[in-house]
Image (cartoon, rainbow, N blue to C red; front, top):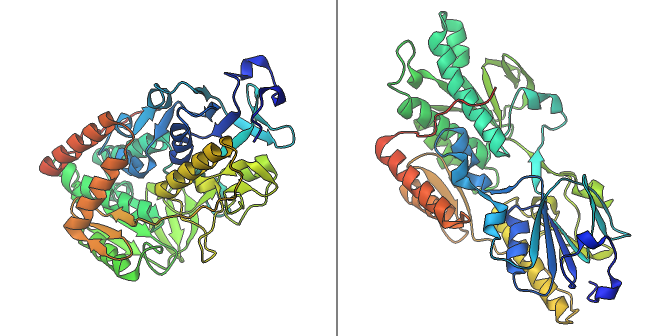
Length: 429
């Protein structure tokens, strides 16, 4: 890392002081953690993101199922960093990185750096069938969530207006592809929406008769969790009326439904909750990537051969002690962000010793509805009401500001007492 002002280059407008330049690409959990942990450090930080807000992605499914409004889980980046003097925020899109010239290229400018942190996250993977994206929306952005919410609610409205039973059945069939945490959370939330919140709102149809089908290509749900918790999730979804179908790989998705394992399912709504892949970080950096597109990084999360370029979060192919990829969790990204910020502070003090990132696994959680959740802390496994309480507490705690915590708590308390869903708006084209 260069620490001398006379070593700096680039246009004058790309300098905000006389300190080493730290450029962070992405304002997700990892990127924001780096920025906040460098508050007060003698560095000039530039944070670049395509959007103006930080999004708490683990609760996107609640927006998609009318449980929360987008503003409950998204907060403007500038307001989060309002009190930080050594940072500027740019709403721009990165299109490349020149590691030789130490420059980040965006659509609008070139930004020189002394340290670069790439924290761009992941995007849905359709496993070679990108044409399915148009027919089977995924859940990664606020726009995705509000579009899915409108699709689900509109399906019931169209079913109410339909005169024949066959189109009604198709409209009231919802297929979720992928049996990971997002899939089971979406399936449980749609079941609660249909069988509780909407139950008495229609006259020609009974929303409680809606079919919610969860398809998983593998042998069980929640493959990353212990098998006992997987079985619990399967049983809990069944009690909620969700049809769980494992060992059923998707073969085709079209405008009328899905074909999986040779079986045809007519459905107006097919929602993609399956795999993810890293964004374009490897291509920008000209770096080696794993099969999921994650950049292969060194023990200190730096790009091999470039000690001042770090890749963190879902874009990083960091490994555990056993040589397995770290999971794509918010806790991983936040710990990596804190690690990189600590490493930069040490270098500023002249400490050049190598550091190795070690992930502390505090547990994994997934909810299945208002009274069912699973939590694996390694030393203890929790299910049912207690699991749901732990899941709720953890998610409220990790929201980034007090207003979001308060609004989510109030909305959940009201929904729990009334079975209501307050954000049932059909928006968009």
